[in-house]
Length: 152
Image (tube, rainbow, N blue to C red):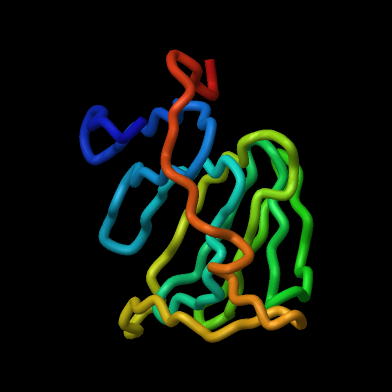
């Protein structure tokens, strides 16, 4: 995965992440002056900490698997299948999880908000039974499936 220089100022992104047995893997594809892109593969979790980005608007595009995006502990915003996306404006709290049986593969494209400092703001959140996000989704170790990749 990653980005390579093309003729002039253009960059080509190759999205070819590995299939995971467990854990999650994120990799930056490009970092421009006002725009960034990354790809993430999530075996059984997601971004399970309730948070907001103060200085970026972002689009999350599902390339494989299924993602459920939440507001607060258990309030569903959307369930996304491949080739569906969600726009998350800056300062909008969210979290997401892998909700299908396959690896979730998503691309995040973010644009800086003019004049705003980018900070990730973690918010407190608990489920009705008192569990926290970390209790409900313990971090799994990263384990890559040997020789298996998405995208070809």
